[in-house]
Length: 478
Picture 1 (cartoon, rainbow, N blue to C red):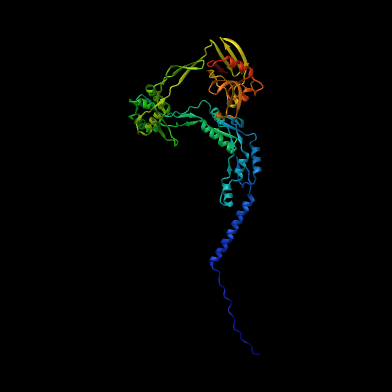
Picture 2 (picture 1 turned 45 degrees about the vertical axis):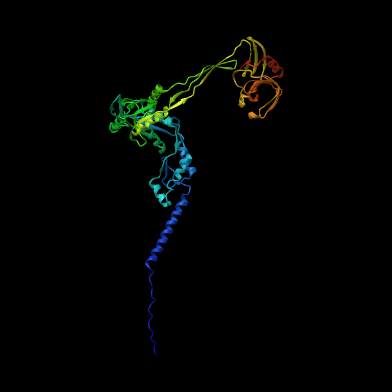
């Protein structure tokens, strides 16, 4: 039997995938795993503290805000800090510091620790390394200073700052001296640090304390002091020249740190003001007071007044301070301002004859004739509480009118009333009857009184009208 022969076939060709495709696949897997890992961390610790978080020294890992807040309250309920100063322990309580913890704020800070990182995984690692959070609290700064000062005691020797001493035209430097002891400021900072950390003990000992201002720093500003004292300052006022010398300028200078802590030469504005006040005392012209006597409401001028003039002290003081600070515009010109004269009035009543007295606090009117009381009546005066108080002083009857209307509209009031008797004594102030009132003499005038006039019963108004004359004095007081 004849066997057929077959030709063996070649295996199919296998084309290997490009390397970049494998890399892309691996990268996708890594990114996916990384993303899932971060999502898992985020979901697991959303609203809860990362592992390793400590709040005020207490481990709050995996706790939510409410649980963290509760733990802090328990821990700080009877908190007291024992401070050892010079080997002597002393207890500092919450009450002595006015200390109160902010539980919710502290808890939120603990739960959010590490959550501000750009990836949850990085935040988790970050927290493992730096997981301590300080407690949030409030305290009374004055009480803290008192406690720190008391703990530091009086045995400490404070450092002495170097300073410039100006005696006349001479300048010298007093050297700084170091101190030794417990610095109350350093102790205050230590107490606050321990409170935030939740620690219950602290220790501080004596050490040398350096002065805030050293001799070297003072010597560095001496040239500026010397230069300021040599400035050719001058003040010219009304043709008179005043030139403060080196000693005078030196008394204005102050050497102190600026906002950046560098020593600078400044000025004592109060000292400059005192100098300018001395100049003003030589150039000011006092106003002459106008003397007036008012007898029964009639004005009689005794002597005329005269305006004066006064130096603009504030402008001069500012200009001098600026000149010292900049070394420029050292010639200052003063300006005199007019001062109006005042009027002094002496009020008096000629009691030889008739006059009317009105007491606002008692709501009464009295009529006198030759020093004898001849009539009295209750009245209702202006509503003081509503801003319509009756004018006070010595006046006189300006006119007498019957059967007329009093119209308040031109004065801004909404009344227009008829009166039988009208007796003005000062401008729109006057006495008259008031038929619309049921009672007089009570304290209800304060809010329910008139718009400034003196109201009285009709019979009283008729009597007073017949009693007074134009020119009869009227004395209104409280």
